[in-house]
Image (cartoon, rainbow, N blue to C red; front, top):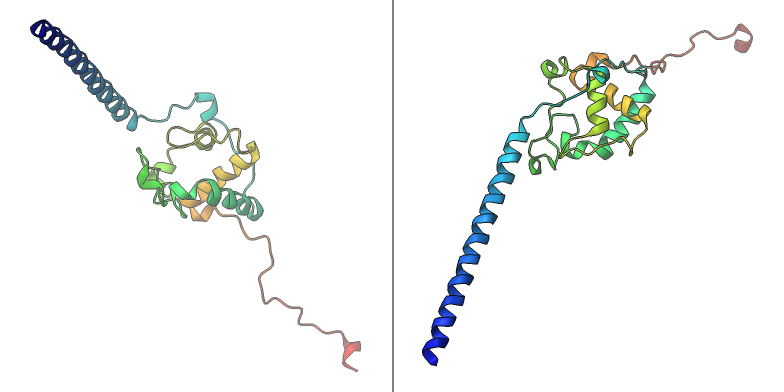
Amino acid sequence: MCENFLVAMSTAAQANLKTRKILFASLLALISIVFLYAALQRDKPWVVPEEVKKLKNPISPSESTLKAANGIYKDECAQCHGEHGRGDGPEAMMHDPPPSDITDTKHMNTVTDGEIFYQISEGRKPMPSFKKRLTEAQRWGLVLLVRSFSDPSALPIHEKKPDGVRNTTTPASSKK
């Protein structure tokens, strides 16, 4: 009787071991597939619809627009793209693919305003979508700001009068 129990126990243990081996192999296969998929997605270019690529920014660059966009950028984008857009924010190292360097003039000259607007609006892992978080005008303002990182000459002319300019003429009646 004891011998039958041991045989039954041995058969059950073998079945249990076989099941564990199958589960372990399945888990390894699943992990491999996930890593392979991630590696293939990493260098995949943005797919932007042609009609969106042709969109022109409806917002004119101004100091007030860039100031508002800069506030949004610091709150929403700088932690990954960096304070100056170099892709070196404090959270940049945690992302794969890493955030792009939007100061790269060569690259930025190859993308249209519509493409930048699309990327901000739609996002792509790990970058979130801002379509529902920001208004259309705010997203177009960010396009202007992003452009200014790679082309500082694109900044608008200051709307204020320079400091130190005074009226040097005094009325004759005040000198008496």
